[in-house]
Length: 280
Image 1 (spheres, rainbow, N blue to C red):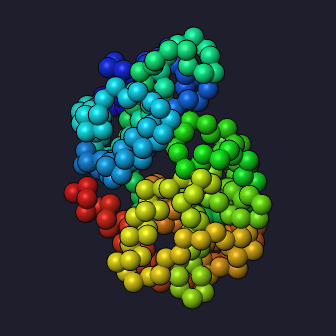
Image 2: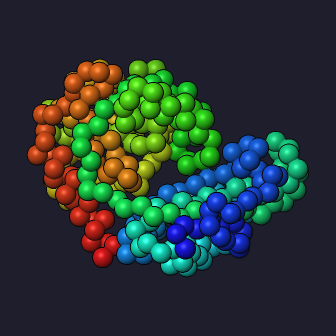
């Protein structure tokens, strides 16, 4: 198959699939999702993605129809049905299906969605151009929920500005990007990232970055930083599954960073090398 869509046991090409109107994902965005890259039919960092999903599902009170281990096995089974061995695999769960009601009126069983399409993870990208954008999201950003309207708006603003991403900020504090984490490299060589509180998603690649810092002897600081501190940093770096560790050249039309290329290169080689080695 050139791509695959799956819903509660049924699968076909994505363009042929449909879902029930009463799925709570359609009315309320009452669901969670994860995305990972696949190379040689090996799903990168799957255990970490599944751990985050099941922790959030437990917090939200979802009745999961399948164990974490069986869900992982299902993803591998579906991945093997797609022609290309280089894939982007997306999976989500919603609370369940019933007539529209804000508070569920019965005990529901979560629905499982999966989409798989061909996509190759590239080596680290060229420096990015970004804009800043107010963070108008709610206070559960630590869960990868379907409630993405504020980040959709920020992404549209970035697209219309002709840049790659939007940096979100709240009360002067930089939180993360519309669909990425963000860190800075300070003039003393330390890497600083926002703490894993309710204002950011604890990204899998962010966790890999923190571990890479320990392995390379680079100090990593998990503390908030301001817009002003970001603009004055030696480097501003976008951290995400698809970009891994992408430095920034420009924010709001102002040149930034470029003063610690050796640290950027070290981190890129470490993170991309880990992806290659674990998907051989």
